Figure 1 (tube, one colour):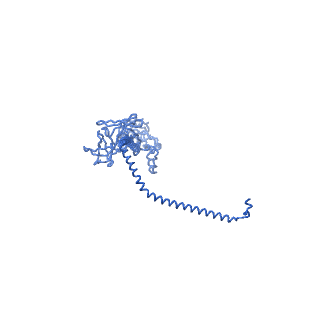
Figure 2: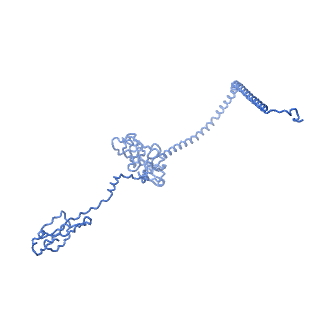
Figure 3: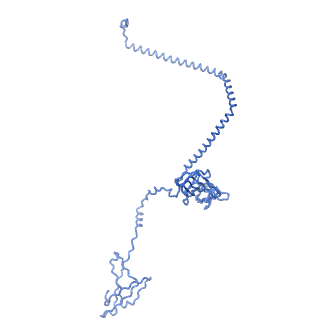
Length: 404
């Protein structure tokens, strides 16, 4: 018998009732879940409270029970350490010795690194190119004091270059070859270094005498130095650049002023050689060549231009002498011509007129002719003797009173 043929075949359920039943069923399931979760929470709290009470009761009992076992373990460890102390001591000593070697190497590397950093940080103002070197030999004597450094001509080192450590000035290069250079220290008897006092700016010459503290010579002025003053290179003579640290002023047992060198504060094994030639390399040559001179004011420019123009050549004054007419002879009334004697040659030569526009209109100079009466007149002596000019040819005879 099928369901369609049953008693519920004609039953029809409205849609609203179906939805209401579904909502009710969902609400019932949700309430059941909430109640179940809350019940588990309550059970967990109850279990946690009971477990804490049990732990508080069992802790002292566990300590009492575990104490004998702990005592036994400590005793066994003590006996083991007592019997094996010698072997442990030997192992620890070997480890300490190994670590000591590493510690010494670490300290040496740290010190060397610090010195390298100090040398690399060594700078001058204005900056000067430098070359690093290591001192490979030491030459000492009662008076001589030099060093050999492993930098030479291949590195650009030249004779006279200053040598410094990270503390201060050491000396200068005395000789140079390929791969090696000789450094003359400030304490050598041949060393002479121009220095100045940083406080009073007074000049002096630092003279080596073979001792550890060179002497200050040629001091000038009242109280030029005091104990504790800083001594720097003065740069006089162009041997050293100005401002390199040298040392501190101290007074020796003989009463002379000396300098305790800054380079004595550390070993002279790593040095820096300053490639210093002269003061021209300290200036920026490109900037000097590119610099332009500012223009002069108009008045000064005109003055400079007027001074630069060449002076005009001197113009000789044109001769203003006129031809001398012959004076009438005493026998001018007679019809016969009177012979005129030529005059004596002039003492002074007649200068020719300069070929200038001003002299172009001047008349030519004619030979002077005098009469018999004027022939006796003596010429005016010249202030200075001059060479005798050539005689002027005599003029042709003319009637008395005629103009030449």
